[in-house]
Length: 126
Image (cartoon, rainbow, N blue to C red; front, side):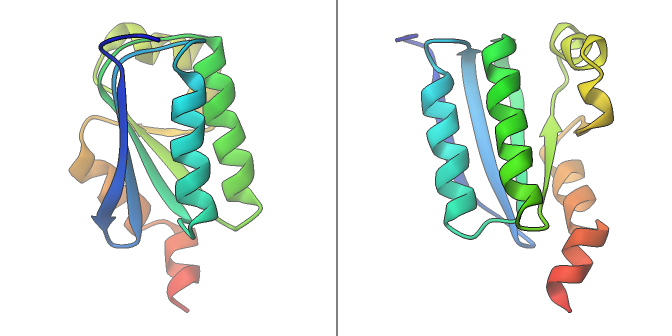
């Protein structure tokens, strides 16, 4: 297990669950991230903000976990967005074209605003 890795989930307001990832998100830590995402979604979250601002590395396993979360959210008419300022990590999303799947924002406030103003958020309020 990666000693510096940590994942936490909490209510960010406006119906958004904030999942913060610290350290290297890779093959050895992906199960912990997956458990946090599934726990949030199965617990009723339909708007999930994955915060990679303090993440130093992601691999293909992490991308697979994120895609699994998107799929699970889509079944519930939900949405996921990503917070990421690291140019190298953003490049991974761009190379894999996942920047077309996820809204990638610079900070948590922008992520909450994006998710809170999405069509899906509005349909939840109806």
